[in-house]
Image (cartoon, rainbow, N blue to C red; front, side, top):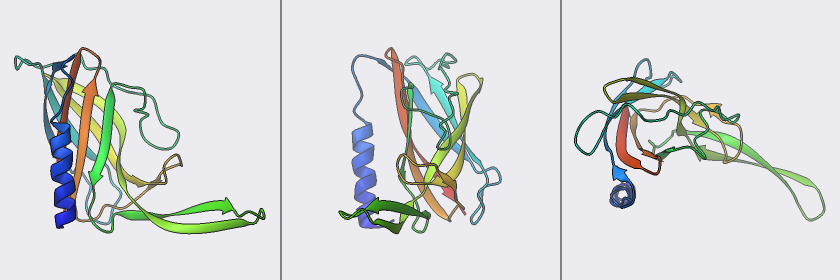
Length: 178
């Protein structure tokens, strides 16, 4: 990991540590499972989260999100969940095309590479406070339809959080593809 990426990771971990005093803090334990995901394929993988109350008992009352985002994956905007891909391995990217018009009305097209994301496509609840997120590798410009991407060997750093106004929790996780 480069020094720049290390500093970004430390900064993000520090910022994640700040939580609201209004809601009770839930404890998140995160484990990842590769499933069939491996370098050079676009297979799905899983993130497992054990959510417990401040007293350590399992929390089985977390609301799952089911709305599909027409651009790819689940629609988390406006829900109690948030998920962010923070760092990805070098080369985990796709090429997008942007079109714009110049001052004379002529269309100009530009291609550029954009980093890939881990996209949640489904959520579920097992029992005893254990929830799962099914993820796939995707890329796309903000606001555009996302496309599948092949995994690249390396570490993927992400943040997952939940806040329903009464309970909140978050965690950083690392997903490794070999």
